[in-house]
Length: 171
Image (tube, rainbow, N blue to C red):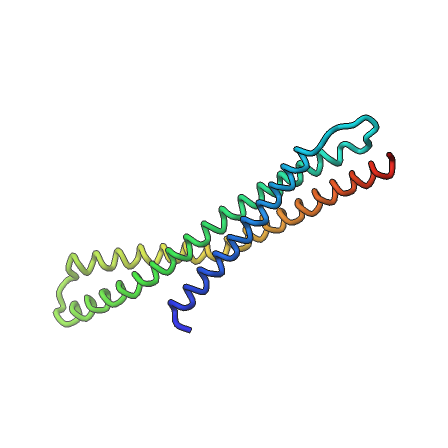
């Protein structure tokens, strides 16, 4: 596969993950909204604390989903900038090599243009280093937020179901 094909594939993968995140975050919000809207306190209810716990967990799931989406957008921006910096790196490497050959042939001190290319090359190299570190660390952070979203959602729905079951058997 060529580089543009890989970039396109990676972009489509991120878009798919982003759409799935929107879906899961929406499900968390819908479950929370429905359970809050449909809750009517009745005398004789038991374990009301389960309802409050479920609401807190569903809210935490929704919040985790929003943070996960934010991190995914940041990762997508890092990947795009990384590709741009790589393209710029190749251009700067060729210009640097050209100036090195020119300087070696004339034995003169480096020109202002050569110094500017060298400075820009170093800046680009430092930026690439930072971007690589971000590209490695962001998926780990995203995994934590993703797992907390899933756990909070499942436990919140389970708490609502348990509360319904308890009240069904008590009534």
